[in-house]
Length: 169
Image (cartoon, rainbow, N blue to C red; front, side, top):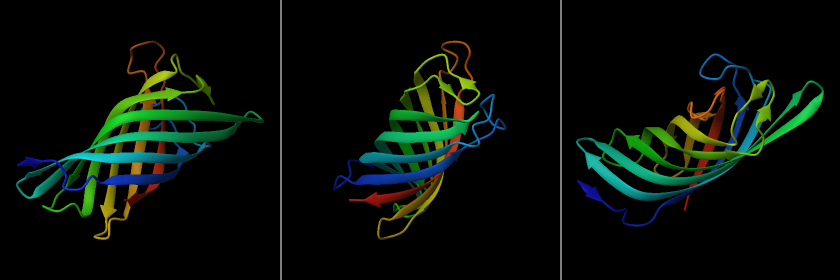
């Protein structure tokens, strides 16, 4: 069963997080980096299959990262656009959910800490898990990765984790 949402739901998402070390995808650590972000998301499709609810969202994001690197403050601005798929294991969109998004990102600097990106235009990927209250407020934890997906070399990429507060309107 597929239907457009009865009322267009939007979210404003506030994010705060930290850079990650080299344990996952990236080659070098940005664990000292701090991140703050603002996202706008628009629900554009809902689908019910069995006992689950699937939602497609369009999301635009801005993130600001900064860190002290060798006695100098470095900054990174990231602008992203991506479709996001969110899954609730219930017929209604509340409770626990999982989320996946992949799209494009523009990074203002190729160099950030020990990481040297070969391109400013990169792929953006995230995985998240969260909980939505019946009143619409959401808290989620997100892992984000940025890289050129081997369209150019080198492809070091970088990662960060964030805690996100979603406010529906």
